[in-house]
Image (tube, rainbow, N blue to C red; front, side, top):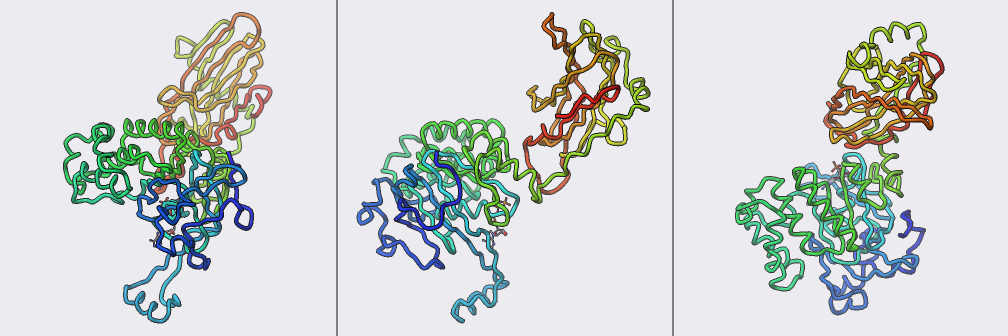
Amino acid sequence: MPAPGPLSRGVPRSLPRVHRTGRAAGRRCRHVRRGCRHRNRGRDLCDGKPVRSAGGADMSQGIGEADGRETAIIAEDLSKRFKIYRNPSDRVRDWMDGGRNLRCDETWALRDISFRVARGQCVGIIGANGSGKSTLLKVLSGILQPTTGRVAVAGRVLALLELGAGFNPELTGRRNVLTSARLLGFPEGYAAARMAEIEAFADIGESFDDPVRTYSSGMFVRLAFSTFIHLEPDIFVVDEALSVGDGPFQQKCITAMRRFRERGTTMLLVSHDLSLMQEMCDWGLLLRDGRVEAMGAMDMVVSRYTKGGDPAHLPEAEAPRGPAKPEVEARLAAITDGGPAGGGASADGLAITGAGIVDGTGTPRLHCRIGETLTAEVAVRTDVEPARLRVALVDRFDRVISGVTRPIEPDSRLVLAHIPFRVSPGEYLVRITLESAGTGPEAVCTRDLGPVVVYWDKLWMPFYSLVGLDNGFQVQDVHGNDAGRP
Ligand SMILES: Nc1ncnc2c1ncn2[C@@H]1O[C@H](COP(=O)(O)OP(=O)(O)OP(=O)(O)O)[C@@H](O)[C@H]1O
């Protein structure tokens, strides 16, 4: 896979033909200038496939290889400016003044963006609201022209962008499928032959024969996604559309996208679902104020997004409280509930004699905002040596999200596990496991605390996934030695 990264200055030899060029760059594709649709005169660029995007823009074919690898998309020094006029007459007067932009405000939605995508790669674009993600997808899909810079795209692009785009609201779902296929250059009968599959995948019942204007947003996405995946795009672009569908449909779409990947379809995804992006994408771009802030492995990009100075930035994990020896006995007494009979857990020579979850003031708490740190207080007794304690965060599907394991010295101890809940909203259990760590027969006792309800109360959602928990997930043994930090 080509290493993602900014293109070096200048156009690589492998990018000689550019079909969409920002006017400010002063260069235009010679084929476009001749009105070429890359069918006949553009044959040197084409492989004979349909060459229009979902937005109707021209798409060149066969942009060849970059650095010896087959390339599907190249963006070079891409910038997009929007002009915002307070009223329509200002636009006309500006135009009459020679387009000097005297009466408008300007917004640069994209600035100097360069990258390339190899054929078959799945690229995730993330960033805060207004960072330019949708604009970038629209420029790459041919729906918007760049103001400066250049884009080259090889193959048929199908873009699932804004709801409503591409379908005629007055036509039924069925007619829209046929019309879309025809507009995209498929032969007569192509969509009709696949209609049963498309209808089954969309799974919207009789609404398939109702006008699209009567659809809910979820039904619309079902129709659009189903249509597009059956029209075999070379490049599939999805902007947050999946979030509209319900859970089972999202799952179906993700399975379909995995198949796309296996078949070598290039994909560009925008989503605030960072776990989806980490799972699906080969690499990613982080946009901030229209510029590329990070580019590379998806995990790194996600980590930059959630840690770096972004509106979605979460507070750093609070520093763990130091061993509070004078309080230890009191806390042990407060949380000890009498061992197994009182709800504790024990095994040979090991016991969790009490546990609870408290906030920074020591008050019991089973709810918190995303990013807040709560502390699991665990009273343990061990006669076994060596023994270890594991503290894990478990989601509602009983999946372990993250956790740490620490050695525990024999004796009665109070362990404090500071847990920053940098996770998506939902319910989580804190699972405490005490176990022998030697070579003899294994002894294990486990206890679940919670569920802890994690919520978010702002208009914007910072992220929907777990990131960086390991960095903040700490366990301290305050009875004697510090049980150590990660
Ligand atoms: N048609 C337009 N006219 C004027 N400004 C626009 C237009 N479209 C986008 N913008 C501006 O461009 C910037 C980037 O918008 P864009 O929709 O690309 O962001 P985004 O990252 O997709 O945001 P979100 O996550 O909210 O969808 C924003 O400041 C937005 O206000």
